[in-house]
Every structure is written in structure tokens, then in C-alpha cells.
Image (cartoon, rainbow, N blue to C red; front, side, top):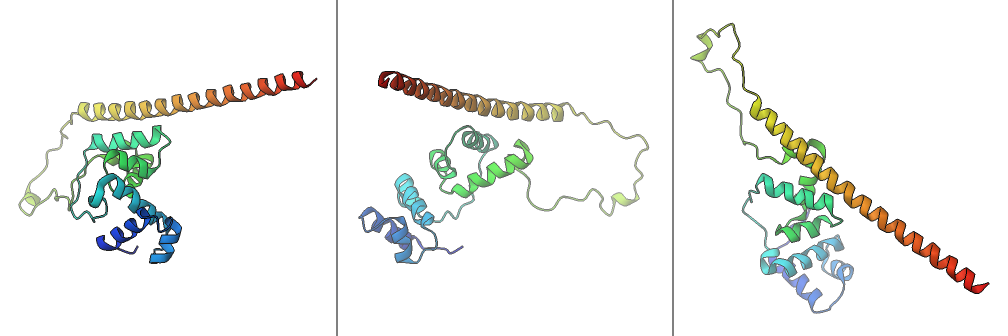
Length: 192
């Protein structure tokens, strides 16, 4: 993917805002492979100003709750990734796409923060000589169980919201169909 400087992006956005052409024309004029890139720059500029065109050099750390909220917003609405990103204050719609895909594959756990780096080994050179006891230590799984139940509840809430919205849309569609049928029946009766 080509990287463009702030000055170049600003020049393209200014050209669009001055009415020099649409997204496709400006993409061709400035040698940008995809008109969608110009559209994104314009939207980010309109939402965030000059900051929307700057490359973000800092790594944003988003909380689990925030990521989950953004994913729920995307799944329960008919908004695009870009619209969700802009409404959430994120200047990169690809990150919303990544979160949604991770959520679809692995559920809410995929959005939880993970420790980075290598895992510590359990054995060290001094621990090798120690003998482990024969009886295993019992682990309290109640917190793990509660976490699993919370995640399942969250999945069900999202599914429920999605199904309610789907049902609402279907009912609206059926009502419009009924109205059309009634109006066409009435117009046929009037013409006879």
C-alpha cells in the first residue's frame, strides 16, 4: 500500500473541497490507485481536521469495553466501517474491520488485551532439581466460569439486538408491501 505525505493528502482534499473534481477524477489526476482513498481522506478531514490526515505514530490502546461497544455498534446498525470509525473517534476504519472479524471468529475474548512478548518458561535451571508433589493443586475456576458466562451473555445480547432489528425491518417491509397492495387494489376498483 502506498504511503502518502500529509502535504499530498491536504492538496488532494483541498482540490476536492474547491470543486476541482470528484473522487474518481482526483484519484486519476493525482495517481491514486483507488477513488475510495480520496473519499476516506475527505471524510477524515471533515471529521478531524488536519489531524485526520496525519499518520498516527502513537499506538492507541483501546479498552475492551470500547472495542466491544464499537463492534456492537457495527453489528447492530447498518453503518459502514468508516461511519462507525468516524462516530467513535477512530481515524482508521481498518481497525474497526479487524475488531469485527476477530469478534466473529473468536467472540469477545478476541478483543481482550493480551500480554506481548515471550511467555516465561516454568522451569529455570534451579527448578529442574526440585521434585513436584504427586497430588495436583486444585485451581479455583469460579472466576473463569463467571467470565465465560459474561461473555456468553454478551453474545446473546448482541444476537438479540440484531434479531430485534431484523424483525423490525421485516415488519416494516411487510407493512409497505401491504400498503402497496391495498393502493393497487383501490386504484383497480376505481378504474372499473
